Length: 112
Image (cartoon, rainbow, N blue to C red; front, side, top):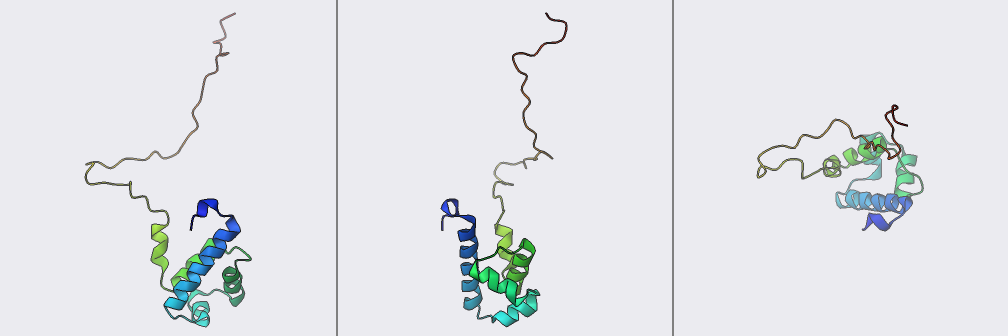
């Protein structure tokens, strides 16, 4: 699926469908997920229907409940982080700041 072209609600619905496929493939009952993840039946139902967004914490619990928590590690993984070929690790700055630009109308104060 191309998430770039989808609305937020459609992405949530697609993620719920993918989750449901994983659950069925692993032959895990809904009641087992509720017990192992600590998620209420209503939260699981809402997620499966795609009607309401669930919290990230609930999503993590659901993935843990079906034994697929490792999928989150690939979610924001940056393969450009380190390359043994390059020989050195790039050090990222601690924060990102906007560039300051000095306007053309800047005066030092002693100019007329």
